[in-house]
Length: 428
Image 1 (tube, rainbow, N blue to C red):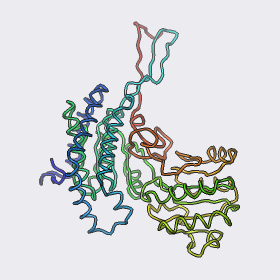
Image 2: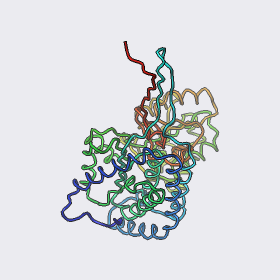
Image 3: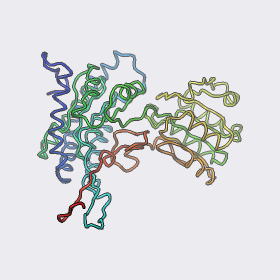
Image 4: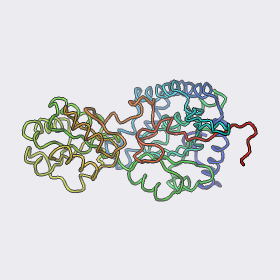
């Protein structure tokens, strides 16, 4: 089935999603029992296929971009949609990296021998069938599919309607890798329709999907969390903060703030709010404002920030809780590290927050006090990425506190079971 193929006329979306789910459940059993070498071969073969079909993928992406031009989409959204030769190579290299990682399935997490002689082990196992619902970014197809392959999980991928052609070809490459390795192709399946009813059908697929992972904007995440009773690994927003402390090195602070906001504005690890200690307002803030404005960033600040530069626009209350995913940042002047912590914990989204300081006591106070999945010291929030964490790839950044938190890689896509070995014991 090609990326543009439609479902048969007599098949409803609901029926097709059920068929996909049943196929995933069957294929996933074989994948869950596959040895590490076979799964790693599938990943390497998939990487080879992506490189071999690079030009086809670029052509498909051009079709997606042409479709995107017919819609009122932001520059940041289009940036997430675009594939380049370097980004395609990054997908292939990411799959190869995942193949080199330790086997996540079958790890003995805990082991004990009871007084009666029973040997009890807690062993990692796949989650089963994972449904991934995402927007715009076709590279998620490779990242999510590859991580599911590595962790022994079947994947049902529902990409954004804007990336239908690109994602379709990437999924075909993953399926080719599975086939060459002797594994069922249906371990990775892409829902190949723009019909939004497919999302609802997946959210009702309790018999076949074990976990849903949504990756996209607030409206998508909220829809998933409101409509399904299937367990969800998700984050709502990436409202990330950089706090420039009184003891921050000026040049370091300028470099990190500029990178955290402007390296890529459309990713969830992009900084959305700059907090700066009042002692830094006169000397450092004007330079940071210049850096950001010269890079094309719009600033929205409180009264103290506006007083520094009349190019800083007034911030509304909504700005402190907005994920712009664009070249916009809110700026607030705070009175010390505790004030910064209070603001982050009140207005943040538990994603990624960073403090810039040479005061180790202030740094430790911030690292301990911020209730986020990722807390940084003297580093850009743009490092909030599974690849940068040494995971090879990620499905997303989880801001929840149950099961997975932070970058979700192959290890986070496993659960465990208990294996009990006896020698004829009976319970008295």
